[in-house]
Image 1 (tube, rainbow, N blue to C red):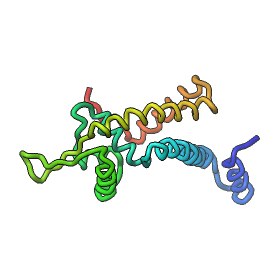
Image 2: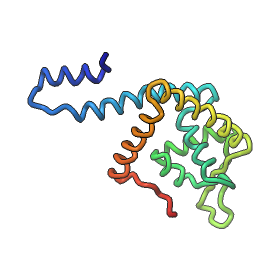
Image 3: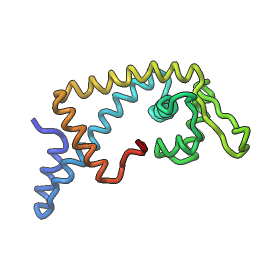
Image 4: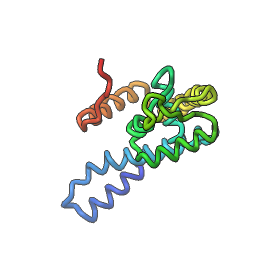
Length: 169
């Protein structure tokens, strides 16, 4: 049995035998995996009244540690979304009572975004189910050894692409 990307590769090889379509085998499969996993993860977030972007924002605040506060710019950079998209996301989460925005008393031009107690409880609840969903997806298709090998290969790709850790250990 072959995957759908194999069909695309065979078609291109038939139509354009002069092209090396092997990169499409990797990139096409990464894209398909992203679509499949995205749908499964979206179901988890929707069940908790969130979008994936909203969960990402709450999770970013939670991972920041106490006092669970960042600026909108820091959140946008972490999420790789525009400032306008982040503003909309923050408004929806504030309307749900999951975060608050407050002006910095020392610099009125600066805003801080903080998880509320309800926001922290929600993200702590959802992240457990999120991890379970991810593990179930992986376990259904790959052994634990294969999962580790894939994680290492993807880390190599990301690091060599310049997507490196921002930690300053």
